[in-house]
Amino acid sequence: MHFEYQNPTRIVFGTGTLSKLGEVVREYGKKALVVTGGGSVKRNGTFERAVRSLNEAGVAVAQCAGVEPNPRIATVERGADTARREECDVVVALGGGSVMDAAKVMAAAVFYEGDPWNMMAHGQPDRRLPESALPLITVPTLAATGSEMNSGAVITDEKSTLKSVVSARCLYPKVAVVDPELTLSVPKDQTANGICDLITHVTESYFNGIDGTPVQDRFAEGVILTAMEWGPEAIADGSNIQAREQVQWASLVALNGWVQAGTASPFPVHMIEHSLSAHHDIAHGAGLSAINPSWMRFAARTRPDRFAGFAHRIFSIPLNGPEDSSAAMEGINRFEAFLASIGCPTSLGEMKIGDALIEQYAQDTLQVIHDAEGRLPGRPPMSAE
Ligand code: NZQ
Ligand code: ZN
Image (cartoon, rainbow, N blue to C red):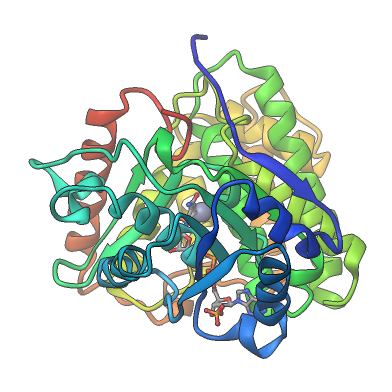
């Protein structure tokens, strides 16, 4: 096992920490570009509280609203233009993964020469990673992606219908202000999608990694068990702050690179899902949920031992030897039942996605895996550069 790991993002975690936003941001700049999504933070009062905290700390505000789920490169360009025009010296992302990802690329696009799409894995052959960015402070309002403390961003180019990844050292947020109270308004379906997303972040390396990583595997199991215990509580009662806290911390741990360190995972389920959500307007977590059971049954043919271990440690299914393929299948069935129990789709048919574009999805997936691996040999796309 060989790896380098550094995650420089400072975390300010806990209920009520939004009130500290101003003092945190003031350390990095005097005028913030505040990036938001389609309006949830305005409807639930989070935006107003954030701006008040910034203003009280003497930080002026410019806005970039309207980042769409599965954010577009045109939106990134619009935000970078605003940051330049308004002479912002810091960026604040107030929203879900889409807002945080868009804000990351906006922060880098301010200094980037040429088309910012060239930062992305699909930007080959002109691919050039960003080397500098405005300081970014993330304030997640949805527990799912872990974007608040990793170096990755996922952006879609509408023209080519490609959804692609960038990961660069300069994209790490300086600080993540993580206030679980901000997630109390997340509806049941988005809460469930987030739970599926965070679990998949650790199963990607659990099932695809190299062998001999017991520490990473036990961390992954801890994330899965925590999400399966507290996730349904957060769905059943959205105002359960303890459940929201556990799910949110799990989502950060799942994709801050710690669990993936040394596992050399290519994230295939994600790469397939990105191809789907580039073509269809679907939530990322729901797309992963639809792909997971079939992908697992396929992968278990070559690695029954990993899936048997999963069945045993997650569902306490007794094993008849380390490669017990019927136990492996039972574990996958139980996982599929869990996904269905929280209201997530477990097949593409359930999402009304037919097979007309199946060849295209396959080609796009192979392309992005090839491009990402060409740049990051043996590393997961979302981990530290
Ligand atoms: O846009 P608004 O109005 O804010 O509404 C959003 C959006 O409709 C809503 N929402 C967010 N916080 C809310 C809320 N509604 C009520 N109350 C709140 N507190 O939820 C909807 C979905 O938001 P979105 O940001 O799209 O969801 P998510 O956090 O799941 O992010 C998905 C995006 O992240 C990418 C995905 O591909 C997708 O584009 N990913 C980013 C990763 C990363 N940077 O590390 C890793 C992931 O694997 C993923 O690929
Ligand atoms: Zn994901």
